[in-house]
Image (cartoon, rainbow, N blue to C red):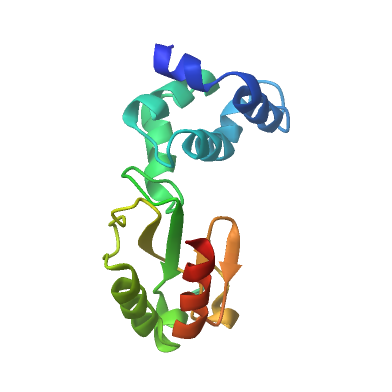
Length: 164
Ligand code: FES
């Protein structure tokens, strides 16, 4: 296990991962890979490096490729820098039909960044994501663990002001 990961996977973080492992039968610790990646990402500047994914694999007794497959399939895992507040805007069909293109354009203008970029102060980033299962509230986005639905430019302006 690398020195970097030893520093990360200890104390409260290790306890949080171990609680997830305890939810599964003995010998099935790999079932905790998704929450383990989320926890490590939260504690490591909001993104997963190859080294961290390797160490998650080591800790859960998985092959590294099995961890990469999970970490690169789901959109909540990050492999590049992100802002402290990450606007995950759904641009799939229901949200698109309800104006997500306009919402995205407003966010880009307001923050001065494109999807995949981070504001100079490190506060905000934008990410386009696929359907988040809240089509009834389209257009919508996820911010942290919260869903924000029926988005309007005015709502976003107010939210950004509150976050600044
Ligand atoms: S299409 Fe946007 S939440 Fe389903």
